[in-house]
Image 1 (tube, rainbow, N blue to C red):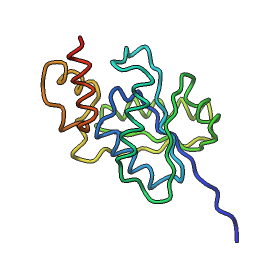
Image 2: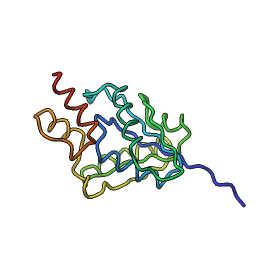
Image 3: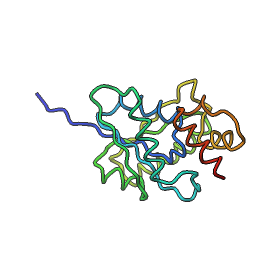
Image 4: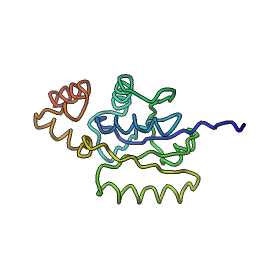
Length: 170
């Protein structure tokens, strides 16, 4: 009987902040891979609201409260290099990406093509956002929070409190 090889995947993002949509994709990705690495990008070009360390901590906290597929391991790691290099460094074979709308598809399709050219052995798997999360983006969550709106429909209470604390300090 052939031995089964563990399939590892990487779900990359800025997670500034992690939203309910991100967590939905993470939980659903654990049905597709045996080991998932949530890769938190430095991404200084996006001028994140939270530091890399804060974003990693938030994702770890969110994961601790999530219902993941049994038997699947999940870890959170920061990265600041080319995604295909990071994926190779961690020994993964799958990149997991979430799609919210048609507008996401064009960008993600181009990225998958570029990643495939750079590293043909990698597969990109797209997971459609669930209907209740299709409109959520970190950018909109930050804008709503900055203007004093209630973001608890889009993020956990813990993330909402961190956003509130950050905006109160501004």
